[in-house]
Structures are given as C-alpha cells and as structure tokens.
Image (cartoon, rainbow, N blue to C red; front, side, top):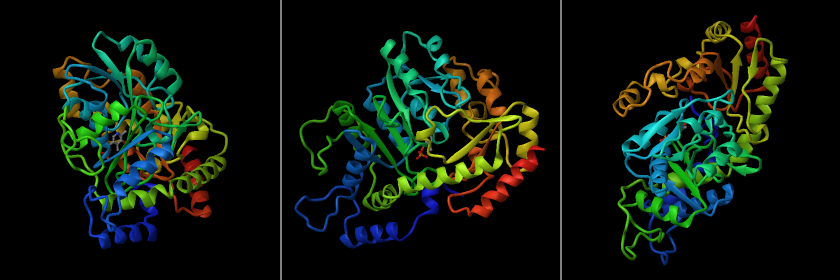
Amino acid sequence: MPGPGAYWFGKEEMDAVMRVMQSGHLFRYGSEDDPNFLHTVATLEKEFANYCGAKFGLATSSGTSSLIASLVGLGLKQGDEIIVPAYTFVASYTSCIFLGLNPVLAEIDESLTLDPGDIEHRITARTRAIMPVHMLGNSCDMDSVMAIAKKHNLLVLEDCCQAAGASYKGKKVGTMGDIGAYSLNVFKTISSGDGGLVVTNDANVYEIAFGMHDQGHKPSRLGVEVGSRNVLGLNFRMNELTAAVALAQLGKIDTIILALREKRNRLKKLIGEPKGFKFRKLNDPSGDCATLCTIVFDTREEALKVSKALGSKTLDQSGWHVYANMEHVMAHLKKIGQPHTKGAYPKTDDILSRAMNISIGVVDAGLGAGWGININSSDEEIEKAAEEFIKACR
Ligand SMILES: *Cc1c(COP(=O)(O)O)cnc(C)c1O
C-alpha cells in the first residue's frame, strides 16, 4: 500500500537501474575521466534543484537524513528551540531531538498544517527556527510563516517530505524558507524505496548540509579530499542505483500529480456539495499534490460513524503523525519541560478527531488513509468509492 510513484514503477526505472549496473559504478563518487561513470546522484541533485527552482540540491539516504542535514546546515545548536506543528511524522521531532534541539510544538489549523496564529506566543529568547510541515501534499500558509520568521529573525526549514511537487503561489515548496527537506520513501509522491533530497538557495547552508551528509567533506562531487573540513559529518549518502530510480520517478512527477488531481476532482464532484463536513482548507488549491482528500466533519460523532463504516479511522487514531500517539517523543518532551500529554494542543486534537483521509494516491493506513482510491483507479472504481462514502454519511 504505497504512494503513487511506487504504483508507477516500470520500464523507465528498470532500464535506469540496469544502466547503472552495467556501468559498474554504484558509489556516488567516481573519476571525471572515466567514461563509464554515469554521475547519476549528481544529475539527480541538479535536476531536482532545477525542478524546484533552487540553486542547490543534495541527495541523501532518507527524509530523516535530509532533515538532520538541513538542521545542521542552518547552524542550529544544542538547546536551540524550533517550532514544529503538533501534527507531523515522528521524524520531524526526532531529527531535532537527536541534535539536542528542543522542539516546541504548535497547533495546526483547518488546513492540517502549522497554524500561523499559534506561533508567536511560543517564541522565546532561545527560539532559532520554525519548521513548517507541508502535510498531506499541500503547502502551509507560507506568507504568514515567512512574515513571522522575518519579524523575529528566525530560520525556516520546510519539511516537504509529504509534498514533492507541491507549490505555493507558483513557488515549489522548500524554496521559500532557508532550506527544504524531501523524502523518497515508498509512501511519498515519488519514490526510490528510501532516499531523500534537500534544496536551498544559500551556498553556505548547502556546504554545511553537504558536509553533514558526507563526513564533513566539501561538495567537490568527486569525493576527493579538498581543503580542510570545518564541520563534523556522518554518512547519509545516496548511491547510484537509488538515484537512477529517483531520476526516472522525477521524470514522471508532473504526470503523477496531474493524474491525481483529475481523480481527486472526479471523486469530489461525485461526492457533491458537502453536508455535515468540509473538505480540508487548502492554502494553495492550485499547488496541491492531491495525494489525499481530507474531510473535516462538523462533529466527532459523524467522523467516527463514517470512518468506521468505511473501515478507516479518524486522524487522531492514525499512527505516528499525531503527537499524543508518540509515547517516546512525549517522554522526551516531558524531560525538557514541554507540554507532553494528550490535550496539550486542544485545537489540533479537535481537528484530528473530526478528520479522515481518503486516499487518492497515497494509500497508507498509518496516515489514516487506508480507504479510498489509488492512482490506477478506473472511473468505475471512483464512482463506487463516491457511492460508498455518500452511503456512509447517511
Ligand atoms: C516521511 C516523512 C519524513 C521522513 O522521511 P523518511 O524518508 O521516512 O525518513 C519526515 N517528515 C514527514 C512529514 C514525513 O512525512
């Protein structure tokens, strides 16, 4: 039950993998003079940065690696506070915690992304950054987030892991803040099984993030030691096989999003005028990936009734995307003196308890999207899903 890109793994990905195998070079680094070396990782980095309209791209081993490289790239240090929404995947928190940063949670609004009205009163003398998370394929209200960041001199890391291909007012997500982190795991818009990407326009941030991902090395593209290293790093590198799959998927991303939007629009039209619920507020409807169609019911009772009838669940009961369901993260927040019990973010609790996800392209029970359609669903299957939904609402 993966994301739309994985549904469309095909000949393009297989051929690309075979070309890398035949080249004999699986490591991201190789000699510039070797005609057999394909530079697949470096090509992916360049092409993804171009696709996003960013100056620099960095390929990594996962979305989590991308977040860690980004946080280090921004120069965040132990004890710094970073504002993160109370509804996101567990890695948004754990990447901060492993670096000794203190995540400060904030409410979401009816877009299911960071509520700009709940940020400013959480800013303290130690706050250094905001992490807006573009949840469920649609952007945060980036105008408001960026205005707050500017006013308080805060850095912005966009967690774009669920939103490859999404944009806000014509700009790709990840390019409005200081740095953006993407995931290529199997549940995302496009996939290489696992993998990640980072984009930024800041040469200095890029150089440090690169060093973090490769033992402190400078981005020489050759893997030879140049100059001295002033950052400590680990190994978050992508290999050539992964990049071959990711590049083939990148070639499909716009077609994937167009197909999803068409199916989502068809389903919405068939469901008709909402009664007793609203569709999720989209901060930029024209930039939506349409990986999911989120319904926010007027009442908890209605949400429970409909989701149960469909064999799905409300979002508060979905897996590790809800702060209160992450007992290990809550235990850590307790240790650092942050709110850490269910009920600490009442607006988020209320919205999630009344919301359910219909899968359009991302079929993931862990995201509360175990019911719906997928990118290969026929018109008849979409009609059937709409009928079932309407029936469940009665
Ligand atoms: C998937 C995801 C991540 C982590 O990505 P991995 O590739 O699984 O490490 C981080 N943040 C969000 C919001 C995600 O959905």
